[in-house]
Image 1 (cartoon, helix red, strand yellow):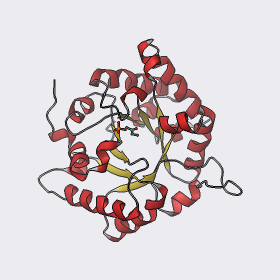
Image 2 (cartoon, helix red, strand yellow):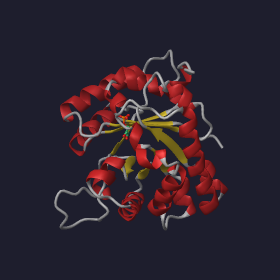
Image 3 (tube, protein in one colour):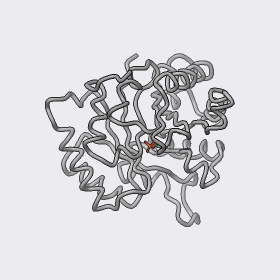
Length: 263
Ligand SMILES: O=C(CO)COP(=O)(O)O
């Protein structure tokens, strides 16, 4: 089973809609460089909600191969939920992906596995692929509990999904201690947990789902360190924060196969 690598740029709360258009144009220019075979990867940008309409218009108008999505979605279908954005609204904006359960939302907005699970179901109901984030904090890592902790988060976040739904998912392993810190997990660290995630999917949802599901690594990924991480068997791409705000840098990540593996 060959899984198409996915490089997804989580812009977090950066760039207004005018800046978003500039970045997507620059990224499209970078990805149009015929000296590299960017067709091997799927590239997605995940801007703030207020940018999505502008990004959609640009991507559709210029027929760009870049996909787009959102960083969060309401678990509710609609109604009196002030400030929330529904999956149906995101679908109408052409979103292919939505991040659910990012550690920043778990930490600052009290999102539990049950809420993440409800959000994943809301996304799937609108035919949007959830990028389900899991990952341990520093104390858990230091205690050596990172695999158990992450797979428990995953079990709760995927509860009640069908084998077919799980097969189509994207799961992102993002160790909290490596996010925005410059402290990248080693390729072996990433592989250890990404392999455990796939094994858990195999046990719970069978071979087909385990072989199809894409497992990304996220946390201080840059053009300079991406190749070593991508060389690992169970890593199918990256969820990129800071480095996705620079077209050249993100372009470098998207051509990971041409990058040197640093030892
Ligand atoms: O949280 C992340 C992506 O969702 C990772 O962020 P950084 O790449 O900035 O460490």
